[in-house]
Image 1 (cartoon, rainbow, N blue to C red):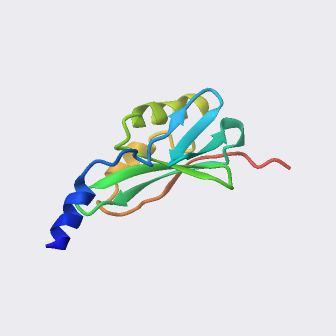
Image 2: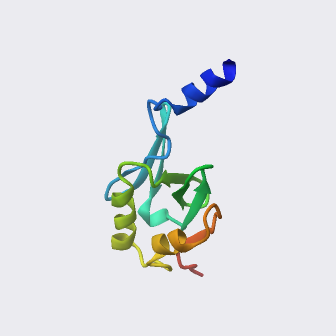
Amino acid sequence: MKWVERIRKSLQPRAKDPLVARLDENGIYQSFDQSEVFIAWKDLAFIVAYKKDCLIVDDVRLVFSDSMIQIEVSESAQNFEEVSSTLAAKFSLAVPDWYERLMASPAFEATATTVYQRAMTT
């Protein structure tokens, strides 16, 4: 019955959810094991929102990128509301109603939406 043990283990809470981020006035941080990645708000290139098919439910995700690093935040993270409200406060969003649009899209479809993209400078 190894498969039962694998399922049981996969359902137990992890010590650290890798899809949780920390925000401050400088940018967004995410920790993995013993390392941390950081994207400064001034360096943020784009934010994409999408739904991840998790078999039974969809999970809305936000992906922040500075073109070299990506930080992904899950809507199941405790601070997801803080993250999404920070977007509206700090950036001119291309799609202000991104969450509602994702929720209205067909179930189990990724429906990637570019929420923010830094203006290209010449």
